[in-house]
Image 1 (cartoon, rainbow, N blue to C red):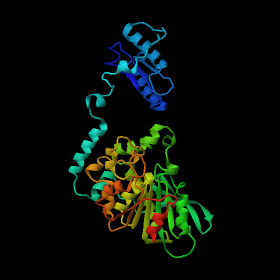
Image 2 (image 1 turned 90 degrees about the vertical axis):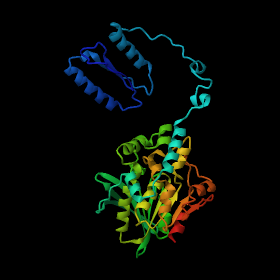
Image 3 (image 1 turned 30 degrees about the horizontal axis):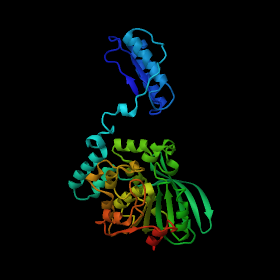
Length: 408
């Protein structure tokens, strides 16, 4: 937003205020609402002529329509005259003319610091002064409250397939906050092992794996955690670099600001889904497993650490550690899984180690850009988590292999 603000009471000062808002950065409905509030104020003060809103729905930047509006406004209030003259042609300075140093960058010319180098130093201090690992600290960092005892869920259809059926459910994680879920139930009687499956791409993408597990005899509850699958916000599904790098930025940032990070909210979804699953008559509560893939793996790991009902867990394509994010100059798809101040309390390898003696499979751990890491790098990160089994998937290997082996 480019905003010229009044410097004093608008009745006593000749300077007016105009709002030159970048619609590409802030929703126009919010701009109009805000302008209406200011308009009400200046009307009460008897200074309507000193407020004007100029809008140009042409994207991000200080475009020509905005500049012309600013010329007219400042001419009226600073020169005491109307300015309707056209904007003259302007010669844009070259990069070399604008550079204040040889390279144009403080870091390369003067050896300055970047946000990343400062964060690395802060992370080193945080890790050095970290208290002993505590699940209570994990719970506080996530802003978690105890989940309600009663699990509310509603069915909305059944799909019959060869060897199993799929029940469609909506589980209420919070009032008016549905978690869409698919329950895969194999044919045959008796209690069966169960898998709580969360895939960062959504339950539709996880259908082949869920179906394979069901055919192998496991009950599978595949869920769309909030902000994933069916519940993904319209803004987060748009293309472009912003969403590719930051994902569901709006909801993730809101969660961080109110002390309830998106990771913790998704853990709450998983806890409610787990409660729903263990109540099913087909399920053996002593054999409840969890499978988290991609962006959903970090919440699944947190949920497993905090809930002993999960007897074993597979983490597929999970971010290798929070420390790796600080060490990397660029990352993508990480923002939704951030927890404020986490490195001063714990890291993902600490969480995985805390599950012992429960089995943990870490398959194709990823770097902060989402790329599978070399086995040696993963081993270095998890050198203190001896009970974690580190797995590299081979070419053509079915995604469900690790979970299938873990169920045996």
